Image 1 (tube, rainbow, N blue to C red):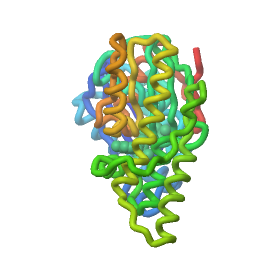
Image 2: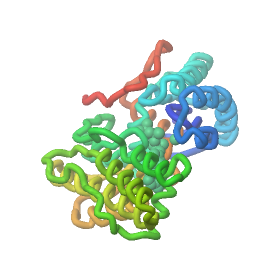
Image 3: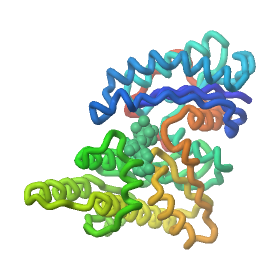
Image 4: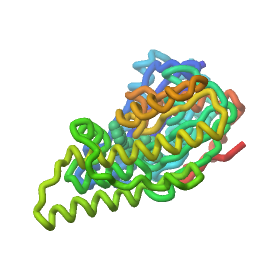
Length: 335
Ligand code: ATP
Ligand code: MG
Ligand code: FE
């Protein structure tokens, strides 16, 4: 079964062809980061304009690379939220056109379910599972009792982890998005600044990163005022250790409270080496739980993951008619 998938929720335009929900025939990604760099973040209006320019080119490339025709397809999957409304609409409209023209079912996909299903390209997902979803806009722990069921058990009260990385990157004068850069710097430094670890004592699975961000910014500004030169690699290492400690600690709490077969790590920040190492170490304490990390090249936004999640949604009877609209603040519905 072949699924054609579209992703355009933020600053990547992507089209993929996926076979049986787990094989990538093509996954074309056109990134716009260069256009957004000079603004230090994604400019929605600019993003929409890029998507409209790129989407048909990505579609043609994805079909050609996969060596398939429209007659070979079983369904069309598309991200309809969460994300930037003007960006989402480009993917949604494109998917509708293909579905209508070729009389194919249209499968609406939640972008965050897509991130989780990036892990499907590593190996099969076994339920019940818990996913630690860390990205530019979200940081949450999701319990999946069974296939196609998503329950948020904890989430950030303020900034997402990726957002915190990007904001402190700005303070250090790094280019957007700064996560990967800070991750690399962190490996050259040591945790010497003792930044706060938020909400460690609270009996829940929630996170908070704004206090850490403020502590980081205050430290840098204070040093500037007194003309003190700080070691930026140590700053990066200290920030990263605080983020990783909190993410690992809350994940450990979740693994102790929920009986699961797998822990899934996904989302853009899942590419973080410190976090991958931290979870490897954590999972070593649990003999019955497998750690399934999204492949490094599929942690960021891409349509392959939307095709994998779309395949599962489709097998579970989900589809939309041509009135499907973008939902910028789409949330998981617990079913
Ligand atoms: P969402 O998925 O919540 O809608 P998004 O799609 O914008 O948000 P992603 O593309 O999933 O976010 O992830 C991008 C984020 O991942 C950016 O904030 C980026 O800095 C961060 N990131 C990427 N690589 C790393 C890394 N190695 N370490 C830390 N953060 C990283
Ligand atoms: Mg992006
Ligand atoms: Fe994303």
